[in-house]
Image (cartoon, rainbow, N blue to C red; front, top):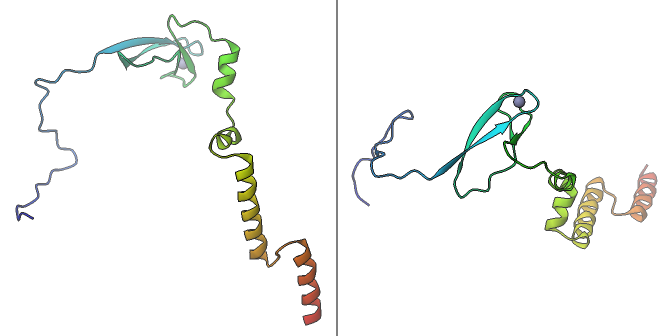
Length: 132
Ligand SMILES: [Zn+2]
């Protein structure tokens, strides 16, 4: 390892690299209209990006629609909104795997309570009665 000192820079320091010779990515400035607060705003997208039909309004936070976008069909909206956490879970695990995990977890919790099962529960209460 070399013994050269490590150069530090402050957090607010400007980058020492220059913009000379750098080609910025081609952009498409897209106009969105908010029907909620009736304002318009622009969002720059990369030229090859898939431009969404809706964007969050910068003024009020409602969903604004892209100018010139076709009205969405209700089926598309349901597909976008309708994914529940359980459906996302099912994309990662099968029901059989989930049942195994549930059983592991339940037996862990029962063990923590000192009850292995319903049979163990009666045995344990019977034992505790004998002790007393
Ligand atoms: Zn708005």
